[in-house]
Figure 1 (cartoon, rainbow over the protein chains, first blue to last red):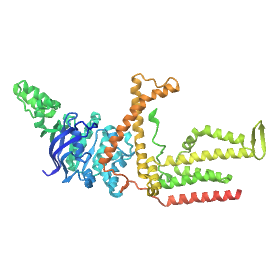
Figure 2 (cartoon, each protein chain N blue to C red):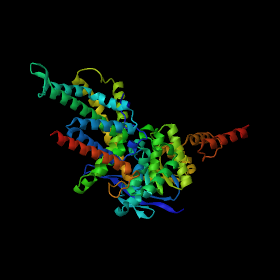
Figure 3 (cartoon, rainbow over the protein chains, first blue to last red):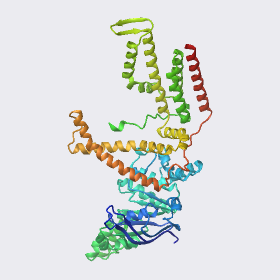
Length: 285
Length: 268
C-alpha cells in the first residue's frame, strides 16, 4: 500500500512552565506508516499521548525530534503549512467549538473561503460535502438548531470540503448520545469506503475501534501494538494491563476460554460471538 | 426564559427589500436618519413617513412588527414630548401655570420630535428585520474595507462579530445550565437586595467565563486546522451583489434628501 503519512521516530515534549524542571516527554520515539485509504483506530488511555500524536499530523504541533511526512511534505516546512493542513483535516471532540459560522453551509464553506477557492467552485464543493455527510437538507439551518450528531457531521463536512487525503478524528463521538454516535460512525465509514479518504480515528470506544481495519495502541508515548482488530483484542490480558477494554464479545469469549471452552480467541463482533456459541452448544448436545 | 432571545431580529421573507444589497440598505438607512433630523419643514417629515410606509409595504413585514419595535421606547417618547411641550417658549401661548406653559412652538417641536423618533426606530428596525446578522456583518466589512488602507483591522472585527453572533445561543444555553446547576446546590438567585442578587451572579459568571475561554481556545485550533490565516486572499461563498433595484432605491433616497435640503432653505 502506498504510504500517505510517515511518522519517523517522533519524540515530543511539552515545555514545562518551570524552567528548571525537565520537560515532560509525551511521545517517546514513535514510528508509524499510514497507507492511503486506510481506516485506522488509535487507542490509548488518558495521557498516553494519542491526542498529541494527532496534533502532530497536521502541523498544529511540531515534533521535538524526528519527522512527520504528509504525502512527502515535511510538516516542519513552514512554507507548505497550508498544504499540509489541506491534506490532513481534523475533527475534534466538541462539535460546538469547531463551528464558526451562523449558518450550516457558511460553516462548511469556511475552509474553502480561507483557501481562496472561487465562489462558483465553492458552491459545488459545499453542496457535495453536505451531501456526503447527509446534511444537505439542513444547509440553511443555524448550528444551534441541530443535534450533537448532526453538528459533528457538519464539522466533518467542513473538513471534507477541503478535499483532504486524510481525516483525523479526535474522539468525535465522546460527547454524543448513542444515536449520534451511530450516525457519525456510519458517516466516517462511508467516507472511507466510498470516497477513499484515509481515516485516523482516535477513540475510547472499543466497539468503534473494532469496526476499523487496523488498530494502533499507544501506551506511555510508544506504540505498544499495531495490528488488525482481531489480533489486538485477542491479547485481552495485555490490553487490561494497559488500562484498556476489549469489546464485550471478546471479553465473554476470553472468560469462556479460561474456563475451558473451545472458542476462537479472535472473535470481536457480537454476531460472530453468537454464531460461535450456537455452534458450541450444538456440538455439546 | 433565556431561550427566547433570538439572533438579531431577522424576519426571513422573500421581498424586494430582503433581496436588496445590504450595503445599499445600510447607506440608505444612514441617509434616512440624517434626513429625518435635518429636515425642518413639515413636508420633510411627511416625506420620511411616506418613505417608511412604502418601504414597509415593499418588505412585506407585517406593520404590527414595526409598531412592536416602537413599543419599548414609548416612555422615552412621552418624556421628550412633555419636556418639549412644557419647556419651549415661542409663538402664541395657549396655557400657562407658574413656569410651565404650552406654546405654539412647544406643540410643534414636541410633535416633530415624537414623529422623528418613531420614524427613526421604524426605519432602523426595517433594516434589521430584512437583513440577516451575518449578511449585515459582511456588508459592514465591505463598507469599511477602505479603512484597511489605514491599517484598521476591518476583517478581524467582522470575524469577531460573526463568531460572537454564532456563540450567543451556545452561551445562553450554557448560562441556563450553570444557573440550574447552582440552583441545585442551593444558590438563591431570586431574592434578597440588589447587592445580594448581584453577588449571587458571581458563581454563574465565573464558570461561564472559564468555559468561554476554553471554547475560544478550541475554536482557534479548529479554525487553524481549516487553513484560517487572516483576511488575506479570502473569498466568500455568498458575494454581496448589487443590481438595478439597489441603484434605483439609492437614487430615490438621494432625491428625497435633496428635496429636504431645498425645503430647509425655503423655510429660512
